[in-house]
Amino acid sequence: MHFGCDGKLAWFSLSQAGAIALAVLPEDNEGLIDHLRAIHGVVVAIFFEELTDGKVRVSMRSKNEVVDVCAICKEFGGGGHVLAAGARVPGTLSEVEKRIVEKACAAIERNT
Image (cartoon, rainbow, N blue to C red; front, side):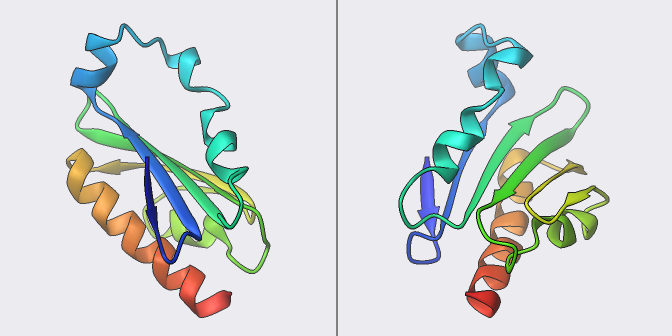
């Protein structure tokens, strides 16, 4: 788990290697993002999951409508609604994580 934007952003990532080593099933990840969002001070939570097709599944949640996670995901070909959105983004886990975290931090700083 990582924190950024003065504790207003929290995220975690699951690589393919990690998923294999831990024998993680897709359904094992459901609801984990809500634990990040529940942390005091966190406004936006993100889960990054490396997929086998060269993409990264991004799930985003916001506690506050002033940070529209759907707008961020739309920039990467995804969608959803203001408080919950997602995308499947081509690239490596580390590069997608960096790009999304930068966008999320900018949105948090601009709107909170």
